[in-house]
Every structure is written in structure tokens, then in C-alpha cells.
Image (tube, rainbow, N blue to C red; front, top):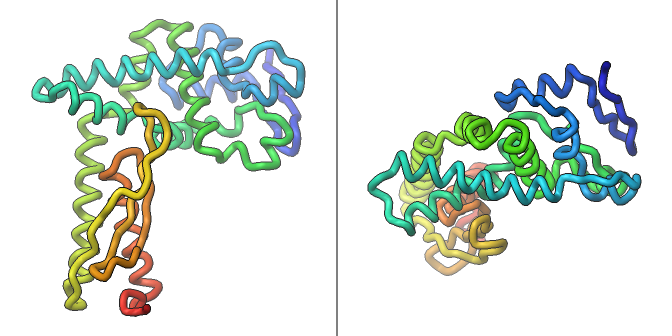
Length: 252
């Protein structure tokens, strides 16, 4: 029997069997118990507003632990040269909200979330925190439905650790080098990078970095789930600013 197609707020939540099966295919996992997936897709705001008994908070708690274990195991096996500190830092980059929100976008979880009317109006379907929490809940549901190895296979499919880290490093080097070369072409010293703020828990921190000119002015800022990725983001912003305001460096 087909699942319900639910109307809530201004957005239609499509929970047909086909929609849920297609979501499972994008994840790389077929749920044996669709009800547990539906629970993972139900935000607490919807449960409170509608009187529904279950929401995804408990599954989010479980999925957070499963994700850390999956990433920890893969890092441990693929990087025998890393010490505890390097393993911890690498894991933090992998499991931050930015990475999870990117995963959520890739598997298109947003249209399947049940949110309160208030969150619908506030743009909850594009909120990185809500999307990240939903993916942790979905992973918790996979763990309960199919066990650890099923969850680990899904994580590994979307978090290829060696390629992720090398890709980030290459992108950082590329964009920071391009910004440096642009400054050198103008006969100016390149910007330096300084940490402006760090927020969130130790395992999922958000870093904000400033690109600072030689005279102390802030030229660009960027955010990321590691200091390096925040520097990369700041360099990208700086390059865009140079294209938009080629004389902006000299403006006072």
C-alpha cells in the first residue's frame, strides 16, 4: 500500500513508497522498516505541533555516535601513520555540520522532512543545522534497521576519507595560491590569515577566518569546519572581491 502524501504548511511532503525507495537508492541502502525512516525524517517541531509521539532527536543522538565510529574506524585503517591528535582533527573535519549538510543536499533529503509551519516559513528546509541533524538521524535509522556494517557502507560511500582530505587540501592550495599571485601581480604583499572565531562543540566546530591585508585591514572572511577550510573559503571570497572591486585593496 502506498505511503501517505502529507500536506504541511506550504510544502508537500512526499512519502509515497516510490519516493522513500528512491531516497534509499540515493543513500545506497534499502530500508526493511520504512517506519523507522519516517521517524528519522520527522523534526521535533512537527511532532510538537501535530501531537505526533516520535521525532528524530533520539535517532540523531544514535546516528552521531555511529557516524563518529564509522569515520574513526576508516581513518584508523587508512592512516596508520596518524597519531591520536591527527586522527581526531581529521575526524572533526569529516563529521562537521558543513559536511553533513552537503551530504543531505546530495541525497536530497530536504523535500522529505516533516517540519512545523513556523520552520517552513523560516526556511527550515535549507537550514544547515536541521539538514545535518536529519542525516545523523537517518544514519541512526540505518544502524537500527541493518546494523553497523550497513551504516558503515553508507558512510563510506559518501565520505571517501582519503579523497576528501586530498581534495580539500588541493582546493585550498589552489585558491590561496591564486589569491597570492593576484596580489603579487599588483606588487602587493599577499594577505595573511588569522582565526577570528570558533564555535560549536569540539567534534563539530565551525571556524571563521579573516584574510588580512598588510596594513591590518580585513579583506575577506570565510567559514569552514576546519581552520584550513575556513582559510580556503576566505581566499575564495577574496578572489571574488578582486574581480568585483579591482581597486578595493587600495581603498581606505
